[in-house]
Image (cartoon, rainbow over all chains, first blue to last red):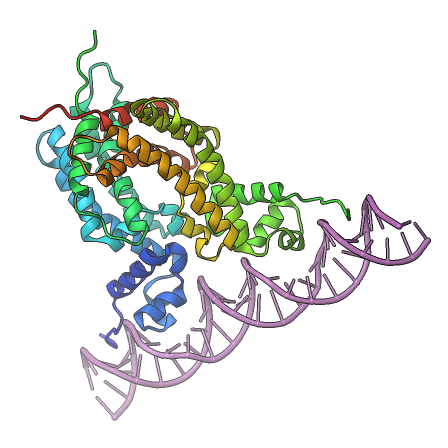
Length: 201
Length: 201
DNA sequence: TAGGTTTTAGAGGCATCTCTCTAGAAGGAG
DNA sequence: CTCCTTCTAGAGAGATGCCTCTAAAACCTA
């Protein structure tokens, strides 16, 4: 089976993730990752065809871990509970995995998405489609009478994804941890944002 | 008074802002700014001691324009109206000045804050202190009975700054404009998040 | 042991970026 | 006109980064 590997793909991705969490995508240079992992650059290029593929691996590794819990929370129970639970999950996952959360606070374009290998772009799109479908289900369950479906989706996305991430962003990108009460603040905010509007007139 | 300038400071900052809006701080290389402005690199270094100073100018130019309207909105009327008005202002300013808004969606650290000239760092800190004081006033006006002051401040900051920016972020960083109903969605969200909790028990 | 495969190891080419430095152009003051 | 100041103009040094390429190490099979 050939010479045994000293540097696994996962180990290299972990080293790259740590660098990205601390210094953003710009800190993920091939030389820096090699130094961080104690590996020669040749080993890096043996695993990844180029820097873009490494950045894609970092991003997708973080995204798929994040979305696994989201899918579970979004599917649990009726729409209102699913929404609130997801908002809480976003915060608690970010607290449990601050490095990967810091990665996801950047744009995929910052991780060189336009130059990702075709297979990685496909993984990215299918992951997003999966979450999108689940979000749409919750949005249909929370739609107000006469509200357009796309508007309900935007409201739900704001309450369930964007707001919790905003709550977490200030702390994580400042180098600190997420404070204790953040889950409850996110859950309470989602409840308030999605509460049915009292009948007008 | 010597040879007249062909390339003004403002023009160079504008060129750098356009590059930063499109490609993030990494796209703001001295060579790229010179190319964008049609100027030789010497003219750039004549105006700015180095890249960090140019990035500081870009950031502060955007921040001070943004905060001017915020100060006005935060000072207008009693706390609840000031809060909702500020949330609305954040969105409408971002729509009116998408390039500068895109700059502010990054961290100052991404614009090399640790190496800014001393004077620029002072400008940054005083700007933030001014906004912080106004936010604190609004937070005191919205504090619930028994709530800690720092908690109220975090809630207000979330409703009035972080949430509107999150609403805008997805669109601006995706290269699109901010959609029409966003102001009202931000204002309504702020109202919901800051509404007094009905007496418990 | 011999041959084949996988992986480490790192030197070096080529590009790009920041910043310095020199030369001179373009204006005002005397 | 002459001197002085301000600014343009761009060549080039030095650093860093991406990636290629060669050589050999380490393991398996036969």
